[in-house]
Image (cartoon, rainbow, N blue to C red; front, side):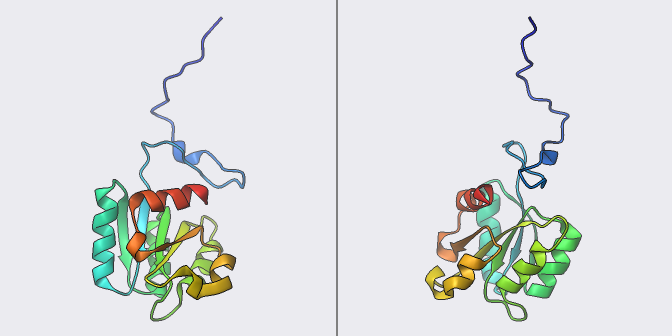
Length: 149
């Protein structure tokens, strides 16, 4: 009787494993999440980049408004968009809706310095996979929300 090979196939592209909806899903810890940070405050973008990169996530870009976010997603194809709710042109909810309509949408996590209750039902109806207060942002919290999707 042949025993199954328990060693991982290091040549396999683990990002191509589909979830229940046919989207690629990866449960392999060797694959790093790629993140686009969208916020109109350069100071927060800098802080978030440092924090997320220090925990092993790969920040592949930044955008300062909704339109720039849409363009950056098209160009960079991040796995995750950390998206401020309050942007100067489009709000984060509108950007999240547009991203969800893409053929291969990234996971979207909304963020704000405001309490999530301030957004009422808009937050619960959002297509985003979660919300993190800016003060509570950590790499682990972001990964948990994306995994729970």
